[in-house]
Image (cartoon, rainbow, N blue to C red):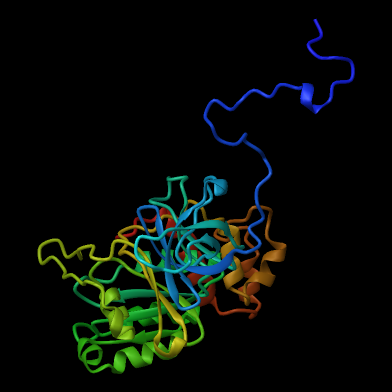
Length: 335
């Protein structure tokens, strides 16, 4: 039975009221052309602190972003109350494309990737020479993650007053990784921070390292007006206590760069890493892979890199370093 006439006009059509009293749902989303760009400084229980101009604004992720999350270092589009006043809340409506993404997994069998920081261009791997003892395999894993993400690595060795750095530096010499060696006296008088700061100028640098190595102590020396809590190493277990619980981006004095202090890690899983991408960090070896068999692991009898090195195109120590990094997924980090 026809409810309306053959040519009904709008006045003839009965529109059912929305039971919830709100507007009908639509797939058309606002473009938010008036959104302001901000930098995510930290994330705490669903609340993100963003820097917009010279103001810190608390924001939350808009529903329209779905499962896409924002992390420290992200450039985001923010709308709403951008005054930064107490008890105000803005909305993040868009996460801008990232120039780099540093990821890790809980272990090598965990398929879930955790984004550590976004848009960094340097990774400072902080390790103590003693108290606690250095963990070379963890360093190797951080190097692999840095190379995969396109970040320049920087090795920062602390507590050189307790042990000499020569042995550790020798094992990474063929990789050409820049480094800074510090001790507690230099941290106290500020000279260590000055030397590290020279490596950070003009960059956004993420600091990683396991607990107790002095990572946050160094960050406090670099940005003294924003001191974070520090802990100590347990004399029985030899492990540090987690005092940094969330990543935080801090501007260096004079706006010469950024440092991102991250929580201490006890593992750095590489389940997300495609081993074939690690070779890109070895430009002297990469041309030699053209003759490698398909899906070559670069650590097998038919690998063409053996002949490439034998022909004098690269240092044998460089091939050893590559293979050591590629095999790090099969080794326990404490080895």
